[in-house]
Amino acid sequence: MRRIVSFLKFFRRDLAVLLMAAKQPETPGRVRVLFLLAVLYLLSPIDLIPDTIPVVGVLDDAVLVPSAVCALLRLLPPAVRQRSEYEADLLLRHGGAILAVAGLLVLLWLALIVWGICHLFA
Image (tube, rainbow, N blue to C red):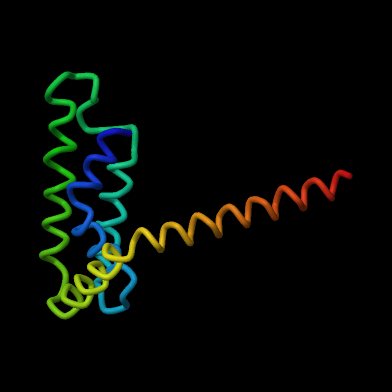
């Protein structure tokens, strides 16, 4: 889990650009699919080289995922990339407030679910 957090901190702008690009209809389908595969590989406990091997195990994550992110950024059409970079900068600038509001909404939904379950069984 620590490797995922450190990766996200290092590449957060690039990942935000790819996330914003994935939402746009002009983004090629192959970029969306490859981005999804890269995210799944990063989150997957299954690696090409197991992390239990001391140095080489982490090396595949340190090489494959950043290479995929750089390649995906190059595959984006220039207009999509420019618009995505602008949206990503806005997101990163106001990300704290967005996360706070999203967290509050999640807590409200959880409270509503708990209230509903309590009244269902009462």
